[in-house]
View: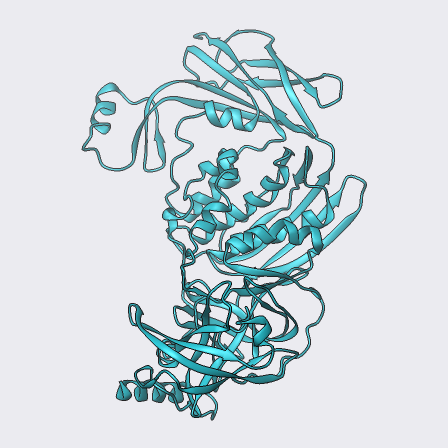
Length: 595
C-alpha cells in the first residue's frame, strides 16, 4: 500500500506544472478510532476556517475498491447546522497528514457525523486526470433514439425530462452530501418552475443573484476553499458548489464524491464565496455565489471531481429572443455545459426559467418558434426548429423539443457532433391562435395524369369567421391509373396516416439532420397524395413497385438489412402556410384515369 501510494504521489508531482508539494497522507489502513484531527472549510466569505474531527471508525469495502472513514465534526457553526451541503471535499488532517475529504452524511442526524473519502482513493483517481474525451449517454439506448418522438410530441411530453432524469443514479442510504446549486437570472417564478427538476437530479437548489454581471475575482485556491462548478453561465447562471480537498500545482481535487460519476467532463471551475448558512433538520446548507472562472473540471469520478487551473472549458452558447404580440422584445444569452446528459436538461431548465419569469405559462397560450431558430452544427447543416404550438402544452413543446433535438444530436451513434450554438426566437401570445379544418372538397373527382385539381378547404379559426383556402394540386404525369387518396390535415394527423416508412431509423448524422428538417410543421395545412404500392423499405431507402418475385425474395425472414413492406407510398405533397396552428383531417379520393 505504501509503495503504491508513493508512486501515485510521485506521478502527481511529475505531472504538476507548479512547485506545490504533494501532501503527506494518512493511509486508510492506519486510521484508528479515537484519532483527533482538523477539517478545513469556508463558513463565511472566502476565509478558510478549521473545525474539529474525531475519528469514530472505518467502513472497509463499502464498494469495489472503496472504503469510508466515519468522523464526528464539531466547532464553529456545526453544532447548530450539522454537516452542511457545500462542505463536500473539506479536507481532514490527522497529525498533520491528509486523511481524506468530508463527502457523505445522513439526513436528520442529531450530530455532525460525516463519511470521509480516504485521500489515497482521490489521489489515485487524480493520477488519471487528462483532457476530456467524447462521451454520450448511449446513443439509441438513451431515453429514445427515435425521431418518432418529434413526429408525435405527445409521447415526448410523457417522457421528457423524466426519461433523462431516470438516467441519473438513485441515492442510497449512505448518500453523498447534497450539492447546493445556485440559480440566478430567472426570478422567483422561474425558480419555482425548475426547482423540482433540479431536486430530482440530486441537487439542492438555492436562489442566487447576479447572473450576467461580471463576477468578483476568485482568490487563490487552497485546501478548504469554496469552489464552484458551472453548469450554465451568463444571463442564467447555474453553479454547483463544494470544497477544495487539495491543490497540486494546476491540479484541483474536490468534493470527495462524484457529481454523477460521468467520467470525462468539461465544466467551468470557479472560486466561490459563502453568503450565509441555512440550518435545517433535514439538510443544512451553505449559500454560496460563484466568483470568476479560473479553470475547468475534467473528470467526474466515484471518489471526487478533478480539474485543471487555467484550462478553458467548451460550452454551448444559447441565444434567446422573447417577443410578445404587443411588440416588446427581450434578449437572453447564456451558455450550457457541453455534456451529452446534462446539456439537454440545462437547456430545458433555462428556457422554462425564462418563460416562467416573463410570461403566463398556464392555460391556452400560443408560442411560435420563429424562422431563424436553429441548432447550429459545425461541418453540417443547421437544424431548423421553427414551428407553432398552441394550448396548455405549448410552453413544454417550445422548450422540450429544442432540448430533445439537442439530446438526439449529442447522443447520436455515428459521430461526436460539434454543436456550435442554439438560437431561439420565441413569439408569445396569451391567446390561442388555432384553426380547425371543417370541410375539404375538390372541383372534380376524376382526373388524368398531369391534370390539376383544385381543393377548397374551409377552416374555422379560434373566435373568428370561417376562412376558405384554395390550392391547385398537380397530379404527377407518371401517375398510373387507379385510386389516388388525398389526405388533408394537420401535421400530427398526416404523420399518423401518411407515407409508410417515415419512422425508419436514420443511418448517419447527415440523415438525422435532414429528417428533422423535413418534419411537418403545425402552422401548415398539409396535402398528401398517396396510392397503393408493392415495394419495400430497406436500409433507409424506398424501393417502389417491385415485381412479386423480387418482393417475395427480399422480404423472406433471412433477408439482410432493415426490410419492411410498403403497401402505399406518397406521390405528391404540398403545404399551405397559415398564421395559426391547424387541427383536423379529411380524406378525399380521386380516380386517376388512363390517357
